[in-house]
Picture (cartoon, one colour):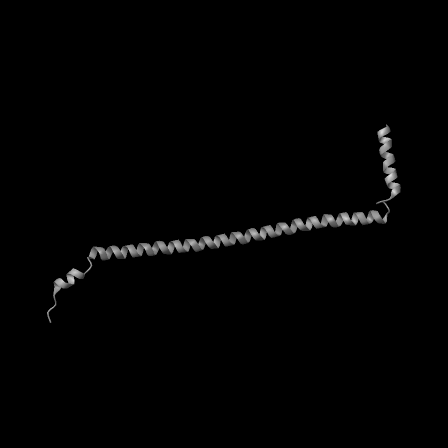
Length: 107
């Protein structure tokens, strides 16, 4: 069997193109891998930041709500105490308050 070398030469890829192709594939592979790892790292960082902010906001809301409810509770306790001592809503007190106001205006 006779092998025709000219036939194989016409179909073969030049060595320069083969080396260039290998280099380009490696470069694109490395760039793609770095881009993927950077993207995942960015996602992880964003998720951690979002979780931290949610926790901080939740803590602040809890603190503010607790403080607000404590103030309301104290106001209610003071009102109950005043009611028990008959200081709240007493017509006599209202009359006394009006009398003091009138005296201040007269003077």
